[in-house]
Image (cartoon, rainbow, N blue to C red):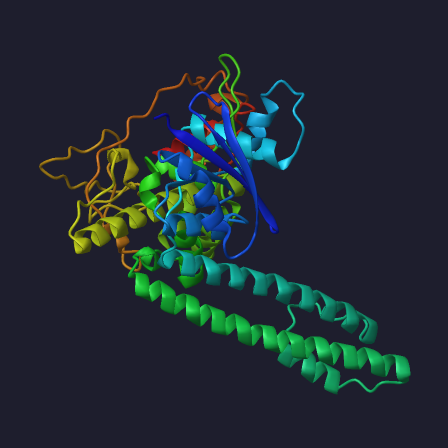
Length: 470
Protein backbone atom coordinates (compact mmCIF):
# COMPACT_ATOMS: atom_id res chain seq x y z
CA UNK A 1 0.00 0.00 0.00
CA UNK A 2 1.28 3.44 -0.90
CA UNK A 3 2.45 5.69 1.89
CA UNK A 4 -0.04 8.46 2.68
CA UNK A 5 0.92 11.90 3.95
CA UNK A 6 -1.75 13.81 5.85
CA UNK A 7 -1.18 17.55 6.09
CA UNK A 8 -2.91 19.58 8.78
CA UNK A 9 -3.48 23.32 8.80
CA UNK A 10 -4.21 24.06 12.48
CA UNK A 11 -6.18 27.01 13.79
CA UNK A 12 -7.53 28.08 17.14
CA UNK A 13 -11.12 27.03 16.41
CA UNK A 14 -10.68 24.32 13.77
CA UNK A 15 -8.20 22.05 12.01
CA UNK A 16 -8.20 21.10 8.31
CA UNK A 17 -6.60 17.84 7.18
CA UNK A 18 -5.83 16.76 3.61
CA UNK A 19 -4.45 13.31 2.68
CA UNK A 20 -2.27 12.83 -0.41
CA UNK A 21 -0.51 9.84 -1.92
CA UNK A 22 3.18 9.51 -2.74
CA UNK A 23 2.36 10.96 -6.18
CA UNK A 24 0.75 14.02 -4.52
CA UNK A 25 -2.73 12.92 -5.55
CA UNK A 26 -5.50 14.08 -3.15
CA UNK A 27 -7.14 11.18 -1.30
CA UNK A 28 -9.43 12.89 1.18
CA UNK A 29 -10.20 16.03 3.13
CA UNK A 30 -11.64 16.64 6.61
CA UNK A 31 -12.32 19.69 8.76
CA UNK A 32 -12.77 19.16 12.50
CA UNK A 33 -13.66 21.58 15.25
CA UNK A 34 -11.01 22.15 17.91
CA UNK A 35 -12.43 20.22 20.86
CA UNK A 36 -11.62 17.36 23.20
CA UNK A 37 -12.45 14.75 20.53
CA UNK A 38 -10.41 16.33 17.71
CA UNK A 39 -7.72 13.64 17.66
CA UNK A 40 -10.26 10.78 17.80
CA UNK A 41 -12.16 12.17 14.81
CA UNK A 42 -9.01 12.56 12.76
CA UNK A 43 -7.83 9.04 13.62
CA UNK A 44 -11.20 7.54 12.73
CA UNK A 45 -11.14 9.35 9.37
CA UNK A 46 -7.56 8.25 8.62
CA UNK A 47 -8.16 4.60 9.52
CA UNK A 48 -8.51 3.82 5.79
CA UNK A 49 -4.76 4.46 5.33
CA UNK A 50 -2.81 2.28 7.77
CA UNK A 51 0.58 3.43 6.44
CA UNK A 52 0.18 7.11 7.16
CA UNK A 53 2.26 9.98 8.43
CA UNK A 54 0.93 13.24 9.83
CA UNK A 55 2.43 16.61 8.94
CA UNK A 56 1.36 19.47 11.22
CA UNK A 57 2.19 23.05 10.31
CA UNK A 58 3.79 24.75 13.29
CA UNK A 59 3.78 21.83 15.71
CA UNK A 60 5.38 24.13 18.28
CA UNK A 61 2.60 26.72 18.02
CA UNK A 62 -1.12 26.34 17.37
CA UNK A 63 -0.63 22.74 16.31
CA UNK A 64 1.28 21.73 19.45
CA UNK A 65 -1.64 20.20 21.35
CA UNK A 66 -2.93 18.26 18.35
CA UNK A 67 0.56 16.98 17.51
CA UNK A 68 1.07 15.76 21.08
CA UNK A 69 -2.33 14.03 21.04
CA UNK A 70 -1.44 12.23 17.82
CA UNK A 71 1.89 11.20 19.30
CA UNK A 72 0.09 9.84 22.34
CA UNK A 73 -2.02 7.68 20.02
CA UNK A 74 1.14 6.12 18.54
CA UNK A 75 1.17 8.10 15.30
CA UNK A 76 4.22 9.45 13.46
CA UNK A 77 4.05 13.25 13.28
CA UNK A 78 6.27 15.69 11.37
CA UNK A 79 6.72 19.37 12.13
CA UNK A 80 6.48 21.53 8.99
CA UNK A 81 7.59 25.12 9.31
CA UNK A 82 5.11 27.64 7.85
CA UNK A 83 7.82 28.92 5.50
CA UNK A 84 8.03 25.53 3.76
CA UNK A 85 4.31 25.45 3.11
CA UNK A 86 4.45 29.01 1.76
CA UNK A 87 7.25 28.02 -0.63
CA UNK A 88 5.16 25.13 -1.97
CA UNK A 89 2.30 27.53 -2.66
CA UNK A 90 4.73 29.90 -4.35
CA UNK A 91 6.02 27.19 -6.68
CA UNK A 92 2.56 26.17 -7.85
CA UNK A 93 0.99 27.43 -11.07
CA UNK A 94 -0.10 30.57 -9.24
CA UNK A 95 -3.82 30.09 -9.76
CA UNK A 96 -4.63 28.25 -6.50
CA UNK A 97 -6.76 29.96 -3.90
CA UNK A 98 -5.48 30.71 -0.41
CA UNK A 99 -7.72 28.61 1.82
CA UNK A 100 -7.36 26.00 4.54
CA UNK A 101 -7.57 22.89 2.28
CA UNK A 102 -4.92 24.24 -0.09
CA UNK A 103 -2.73 25.20 2.89
CA UNK A 104 -3.04 21.69 4.34
CA UNK A 105 -2.18 20.16 0.96
CA UNK A 106 0.91 22.40 0.73
CA UNK A 107 1.96 21.24 4.18
CA UNK A 108 1.62 17.60 3.12
CA UNK A 109 3.66 18.17 -0.06
CA UNK A 110 6.36 20.00 1.88
CA UNK A 111 6.63 17.13 4.36
CA UNK A 112 6.71 14.62 1.52
CA UNK A 113 9.44 16.32 -0.49
CA UNK A 114 11.56 18.25 2.02
CA UNK A 115 14.51 16.55 3.66
CA UNK A 116 14.79 19.02 6.53
CA UNK A 117 11.43 18.31 8.15
CA UNK A 118 11.85 17.24 11.78
CA UNK A 119 9.90 14.55 13.55
CA UNK A 120 7.87 15.71 16.53
CA UNK A 121 8.90 14.35 19.93
CA UNK A 122 6.99 13.98 23.15
CA UNK A 123 7.35 16.85 25.59
CA UNK A 124 10.18 16.28 28.07
CA UNK A 125 12.06 18.30 30.67
CA UNK A 126 13.31 20.67 27.97
CA UNK A 127 9.71 21.79 27.49
CA UNK A 128 9.63 22.83 31.16
CA UNK A 129 12.73 24.95 30.63
CA UNK A 130 11.19 26.54 27.54
CA UNK A 131 7.99 27.42 29.43
CA UNK A 132 9.74 29.17 32.29
CA UNK A 133 12.24 30.80 29.96
CA UNK A 134 9.39 32.35 28.00
CA UNK A 135 7.80 33.49 31.24
CA UNK A 136 11.07 35.17 32.24
CA UNK A 137 11.29 36.99 28.89
CA UNK A 138 7.68 38.16 29.12
CA UNK A 139 8.22 39.51 32.62
CA UNK A 140 11.34 41.33 31.44
CA UNK A 141 9.39 43.04 28.65
CA UNK A 142 6.60 43.97 31.05
CA UNK A 143 9.08 45.43 33.51
CA UNK A 144 10.68 47.55 30.80
CA UNK A 145 7.26 48.86 29.79
CA UNK A 146 6.28 49.78 33.35
CA UNK A 147 9.68 51.37 34.02
CA UNK A 148 9.36 53.54 30.90
CA UNK A 149 5.92 54.71 31.98
CA UNK A 150 7.24 55.50 35.44
CA UNK A 151 10.08 57.53 33.93
CA UNK A 152 7.58 59.47 31.81
CA UNK A 153 5.44 60.40 34.85
CA UNK A 154 8.50 61.39 36.92
CA UNK A 155 9.62 63.73 34.11
CA UNK A 156 6.35 65.64 34.65
CA UNK A 157 7.00 65.91 38.39
CA UNK A 158 10.77 66.51 38.55
CA UNK A 159 12.80 68.60 36.08
CA UNK A 160 14.94 66.17 34.11
CA UNK A 161 13.31 63.15 35.70
CA UNK A 162 15.56 60.24 36.71
CA UNK A 163 18.62 59.84 34.52
CA UNK A 164 19.50 56.30 35.62
CA UNK A 165 17.67 53.00 35.85
CA UNK A 166 14.75 53.27 38.25
CA UNK A 167 13.77 50.82 40.96
CA UNK A 168 10.61 50.59 43.02
CA UNK A 169 12.39 51.57 46.25
CA UNK A 170 14.12 54.57 44.64
CA UNK A 171 10.84 55.75 43.12
CA UNK A 172 9.08 55.47 46.49
CA UNK A 173 11.78 57.56 48.20
CA UNK A 174 11.61 60.14 45.44
CA UNK A 175 7.84 60.44 45.64
CA UNK A 176 7.99 60.97 49.39
CA UNK A 177 10.08 64.11 48.84
CA UNK A 178 7.55 65.64 46.46
CA UNK A 179 4.86 67.94 47.86
CA UNK A 180 2.01 68.18 45.31
CA UNK A 181 1.03 71.77 44.58
CA UNK A 182 -2.40 70.95 43.23
CA UNK A 183 -4.84 68.28 42.19
CA UNK A 184 -2.99 67.58 38.92
CA UNK A 185 0.36 66.93 40.60
CA UNK A 186 -1.36 64.84 43.27
CA UNK A 187 -2.89 62.65 40.53
CA UNK A 188 0.50 62.26 38.90
CA UNK A 189 2.06 61.29 42.22
CA UNK A 190 -0.63 58.66 42.72
CA UNK A 191 -0.04 57.32 39.20
CA UNK A 192 3.72 57.16 39.79
CA UNK A 193 3.13 55.35 43.09
CA UNK A 194 0.92 52.84 41.28
CA UNK A 195 3.65 52.25 38.68
CA UNK A 196 6.21 51.79 41.45
CA UNK A 197 3.96 49.21 43.09
CA UNK A 198 3.57 47.39 39.76
CA UNK A 199 7.33 47.44 39.38
CA UNK A 200 7.77 45.94 42.85
CA UNK A 201 5.36 43.10 42.03
CA UNK A 202 7.03 42.37 38.70
CA UNK A 203 10.45 42.25 40.36
CA UNK A 204 9.13 39.71 42.85
CA UNK A 205 7.71 37.53 40.07
CA UNK A 206 11.01 37.76 38.15
CA UNK A 207 12.89 36.50 41.22
CA UNK A 208 10.45 33.63 41.62
CA UNK A 209 10.77 32.67 37.95
CA UNK A 210 14.57 32.83 38.14
CA UNK A 211 14.48 30.49 41.14
CA UNK A 212 12.30 28.03 39.21
CA UNK A 213 14.69 28.19 36.27
CA UNK A 214 17.65 27.52 38.55
CA UNK A 215 15.92 24.48 40.07
CA UNK A 216 14.94 23.15 36.63
CA UNK A 217 18.48 23.58 35.30
CA UNK A 218 19.95 21.85 38.34
CA UNK A 219 17.65 18.89 37.69
CA UNK A 220 19.09 18.47 34.19
CA UNK A 221 22.68 18.18 35.46
CA UNK A 222 23.92 20.15 32.45
CA UNK A 223 27.47 21.40 32.19
CA UNK A 224 26.45 24.61 30.41
CA UNK A 225 26.50 26.60 33.64
CA UNK A 226 30.21 25.84 33.93
CA UNK A 227 30.88 28.22 31.04
CA UNK A 228 31.76 31.77 32.00
CA UNK A 229 28.75 34.04 31.47
CA UNK A 230 26.18 31.22 31.18
CA UNK A 231 23.78 31.12 34.08
CA UNK A 232 20.46 29.34 34.62
CA UNK A 233 18.51 31.83 32.48
CA UNK A 234 20.78 31.49 29.43
CA UNK A 235 21.16 27.73 29.87
CA UNK A 236 17.38 27.31 30.03
CA UNK A 237 16.92 29.36 26.86
CA UNK A 238 19.50 27.26 25.00
CA UNK A 239 18.33 23.82 26.15
CA UNK A 240 14.66 24.72 25.75
CA UNK A 241 15.14 25.63 22.09
CA UNK A 242 17.70 22.97 21.15
CA UNK A 243 16.15 19.99 23.00
CA UNK A 244 17.97 17.28 21.00
CA UNK A 245 21.51 18.26 20.00
CA UNK A 246 21.84 15.20 17.74
CA UNK A 247 19.74 16.94 15.10
CA UNK A 248 22.77 19.14 14.30
CA UNK A 249 25.39 17.33 12.17
CA UNK A 250 28.17 19.55 13.48
CA UNK A 251 29.07 22.78 15.18
CA UNK A 252 28.86 24.69 11.88
CA UNK A 253 25.20 23.74 11.52
CA UNK A 254 24.66 24.69 15.14
CA UNK A 255 26.23 28.10 14.49
CA UNK A 256 23.97 28.54 11.47
CA UNK A 257 20.98 27.71 13.67
CA UNK A 258 21.78 30.38 16.24
CA UNK A 259 23.00 32.98 13.73
CA UNK A 260 26.67 33.16 14.76
CA UNK A 261 27.93 31.86 11.38
CA UNK A 262 28.36 34.52 8.67
CA UNK A 263 26.32 34.26 5.46
CA UNK A 264 28.13 33.93 2.15
CA UNK A 265 27.00 36.45 -0.49
CA UNK A 266 29.72 35.74 -3.04
CA UNK A 267 29.47 36.29 -6.75
CA UNK A 268 32.02 34.99 -9.22
CA UNK A 269 35.61 35.08 -7.95
CA UNK A 270 34.76 37.58 -5.21
CA UNK A 271 34.15 35.92 -1.85
CA UNK A 272 32.08 38.00 0.57
CA UNK A 273 30.51 37.15 3.92
CA UNK A 274 28.10 39.28 5.90
CA UNK A 275 26.40 39.23 9.27
CA UNK A 276 23.70 36.59 9.59
CA UNK A 277 20.26 37.57 10.79
CA UNK A 278 18.82 34.11 10.31
CA UNK A 279 18.28 31.34 12.76
CA UNK A 280 16.76 31.29 16.21
CA UNK A 281 16.91 34.87 17.49
CA UNK A 282 16.26 33.86 21.10
CA UNK A 283 19.19 31.46 21.01
CA UNK A 284 21.35 34.07 19.32
CA UNK A 285 20.47 36.61 22.01
CA UNK A 286 21.45 34.14 24.73
CA UNK A 287 24.87 33.65 23.13
CA UNK A 288 25.22 37.41 22.73
CA UNK A 289 24.58 37.99 26.43
CA UNK A 290 27.14 35.33 27.38
CA UNK A 291 29.75 36.93 25.10
CA UNK A 292 29.05 40.44 26.43
CA UNK A 293 29.39 39.15 29.99
CA UNK A 294 32.80 37.70 29.20
CA UNK A 295 33.96 40.92 27.56
CA UNK A 296 32.95 42.94 30.62
CA UNK A 297 35.15 40.85 32.93
CA UNK A 298 38.84 41.32 32.30
CA UNK A 299 39.81 37.99 33.89
CA UNK A 300 37.62 35.88 31.62
CA UNK A 301 38.97 33.77 28.81
CA UNK A 302 36.57 35.38 26.38
CA UNK A 303 37.94 38.85 27.15
CA UNK A 304 41.44 37.64 26.32
CA UNK A 305 40.17 36.30 22.99
CA UNK A 306 38.34 39.58 22.36
CA UNK A 307 41.50 41.62 23.02
CA UNK A 308 43.44 39.31 20.73
CA UNK A 309 41.06 40.01 17.85
CA UNK A 310 41.27 43.76 18.49
CA UNK A 311 45.06 43.55 18.34
CA UNK A 312 44.76 41.77 14.99
CA UNK A 313 42.99 44.83 13.58
CA UNK A 314 39.34 43.82 13.87
CA UNK A 315 36.71 46.34 14.87
CA UNK A 316 34.94 45.85 18.22
CA UNK A 317 31.85 44.47 16.48
CA UNK A 318 33.90 42.05 14.41
CA UNK A 319 35.80 40.90 17.50
CA UNK A 320 32.52 40.39 19.36
CA UNK A 321 31.09 38.34 16.50
CA UNK A 322 34.20 36.15 16.49
CA UNK A 323 33.83 35.66 20.24
CA UNK A 324 30.16 34.75 19.85
CA UNK A 325 31.13 32.02 17.40
CA UNK A 326 33.59 30.60 19.92
CA UNK A 327 30.90 30.69 22.62
CA UNK A 328 28.59 28.84 20.23
CA UNK A 329 31.24 26.16 19.71
CA UNK A 330 31.76 25.80 23.46
CA UNK A 331 28.00 25.52 24.10
CA UNK A 332 27.68 22.88 21.38
CA UNK A 333 30.51 20.88 22.96
CA UNK A 334 28.79 21.04 26.35
CA UNK A 335 25.49 19.89 24.85
CA UNK A 336 27.25 16.98 23.18
CA UNK A 337 28.98 16.01 26.42
CA UNK A 338 25.65 16.15 28.27
CA UNK A 339 24.05 13.94 25.62
CA UNK A 340 26.84 11.38 25.92
CA UNK A 341 26.54 11.29 29.70
CA UNK A 342 22.75 10.90 29.46
CA UNK A 343 23.16 8.05 26.96
CA UNK A 344 25.70 6.37 29.21
CA UNK A 345 23.37 6.60 32.20
CA UNK A 346 20.52 5.17 30.15
CA UNK A 347 22.68 2.26 29.06
CA UNK A 348 22.31 3.07 25.38
CA UNK A 349 24.92 3.93 22.75
CA UNK A 350 26.70 7.15 23.58
CA UNK A 351 27.71 9.98 21.36
CA UNK A 352 25.87 11.57 18.52
CA UNK A 353 24.82 9.68 15.43
CA UNK A 354 26.17 10.87 12.13
CA UNK A 355 28.61 13.40 13.56
CA UNK A 356 32.24 13.75 12.65
CA UNK A 357 35.08 15.09 14.69
CA UNK A 358 34.41 18.62 13.48
CA UNK A 359 31.32 18.67 15.70
CA UNK A 360 33.47 18.91 18.80
CA UNK A 361 34.53 22.32 20.00
CA UNK A 362 38.08 23.48 19.67
CA UNK A 363 40.19 22.88 22.68
CA UNK A 364 38.32 19.84 23.95
CA UNK A 365 41.47 18.26 25.30
CA UNK A 366 41.77 18.79 29.08
CA UNK A 367 44.80 21.03 28.56
CA UNK A 368 43.37 23.00 25.65
CA UNK A 369 41.77 26.41 25.98
CA UNK A 370 38.23 27.04 24.79
CA UNK A 371 39.15 30.19 22.87
CA UNK A 372 42.75 29.55 21.90
CA UNK A 373 45.85 31.38 23.09
CA UNK A 374 45.30 35.11 23.45
CA UNK A 375 48.98 36.14 23.43
CA UNK A 376 52.04 34.42 21.96
CA UNK A 377 53.91 32.14 24.30
CA UNK A 378 55.68 28.83 24.59
CA UNK A 379 53.87 25.92 23.04
CA UNK A 380 52.34 23.38 25.41
CA UNK A 381 50.23 21.40 22.96
CA UNK A 382 49.70 17.93 24.39
CA UNK A 383 48.76 15.13 22.11
CA UNK A 384 47.16 11.76 22.49
CA UNK A 385 47.91 8.47 20.81
CA UNK A 386 44.87 8.77 18.57
CA UNK A 387 45.03 12.46 17.71
CA UNK A 388 47.94 14.28 16.15
CA UNK A 389 48.46 18.02 16.69
CA UNK A 390 47.12 20.36 14.03
CA UNK A 391 49.69 22.32 12.01
CA UNK A 392 50.14 25.92 13.05
CA UNK A 393 51.06 27.78 16.21
CA UNK A 394 50.73 25.80 19.41
CA UNK A 395 48.33 26.82 22.16
CA UNK A 396 49.14 27.24 25.79
CA UNK A 397 47.60 25.86 28.91
CA UNK A 398 44.52 27.42 30.43
CA UNK A 399 45.09 29.95 33.20
CA UNK A 400 43.54 30.08 36.61
CA UNK A 401 40.06 31.54 36.80
CA UNK A 402 39.12 30.39 33.30
CA UNK A 403 36.29 28.00 32.52
CA UNK A 404 37.20 24.42 33.33
CA UNK A 405 34.54 22.82 31.17
CA UNK A 406 37.13 21.92 28.55
CA UNK A 407 38.47 19.30 30.96
CA UNK A 408 35.30 17.24 30.50
CA UNK A 409 35.39 17.11 26.73
CA UNK A 410 37.00 14.42 24.52
CA UNK A 411 39.89 15.06 22.11
CA UNK A 412 39.10 16.17 18.59
CA UNK A 413 40.77 16.15 15.23
CA UNK A 414 41.62 19.45 13.58
CA UNK A 415 39.25 20.86 11.00
CA UNK A 416 40.67 21.22 7.49
CA UNK A 417 40.49 24.82 6.33
CA UNK A 418 39.80 25.61 2.68
CA UNK A 419 42.47 27.88 1.34
CA UNK A 420 41.10 30.98 -0.38
CA UNK A 421 43.06 33.39 -2.56
CA UNK A 422 44.50 36.23 -0.46
CA UNK A 423 45.82 39.58 -1.60
CA UNK A 424 49.43 40.34 -1.01
CA UNK A 425 50.50 43.07 1.37
CA UNK A 426 51.40 45.42 -1.47
CA UNK A 427 48.08 44.91 -3.26
CA UNK A 428 45.99 45.92 -0.25
CA UNK A 429 45.04 49.57 0.27
CA UNK A 430 47.73 51.19 2.39
CA UNK A 431 50.28 48.47 1.57
CA UNK A 432 52.61 46.69 3.92
CA UNK A 433 54.72 49.79 4.35
CA UNK A 434 51.86 51.60 6.01
CA UNK A 435 51.53 49.00 8.74
CA UNK A 436 55.18 48.22 9.38
CA UNK A 437 55.90 51.42 11.32
CA UNK A 438 53.04 50.67 13.68
CA UNK A 439 54.24 47.12 14.15
CA UNK A 440 57.80 48.24 14.77
CA UNK A 441 56.72 50.89 17.24
CA UNK A 442 54.55 48.40 19.05
CA UNK A 443 57.40 45.91 19.33
CA UNK A 444 59.77 48.63 20.54
CA UNK A 445 57.46 49.91 23.27
CA UNK A 446 56.07 46.52 24.28
CA UNK A 447 52.51 47.88 24.15
CA UNK A 448 49.50 45.87 23.04
CA UNK A 449 47.43 48.75 21.80
CA UNK A 450 44.86 48.10 19.13
CA UNK A 451 46.12 48.55 15.57
CA UNK A 452 43.44 49.10 12.97
CA UNK A 453 44.50 48.27 9.43
CA UNK A 454 42.85 49.07 6.16
CA UNK A 455 41.51 46.06 4.34
CA UNK A 456 39.70 45.73 1.00
CA UNK A 457 35.97 46.17 1.13
CA UNK A 458 34.15 42.92 1.84
CA UNK A 459 37.09 40.97 3.24
CA UNK A 460 36.45 41.49 6.96
CA UNK A 461 33.60 39.00 7.09
CA UNK A 462 35.64 36.35 5.27
CA UNK A 463 38.38 36.77 7.82
CA UNK A 464 35.79 36.55 10.57
CA UNK A 465 34.46 33.29 9.16
CA UNK A 466 37.95 31.82 9.16
CA UNK A 467 38.51 32.94 12.76
CA UNK A 468 35.13 31.71 13.89
CA UNK A 469 35.39 28.23 12.44
CA UNK A 470 39.04 27.53 13.19
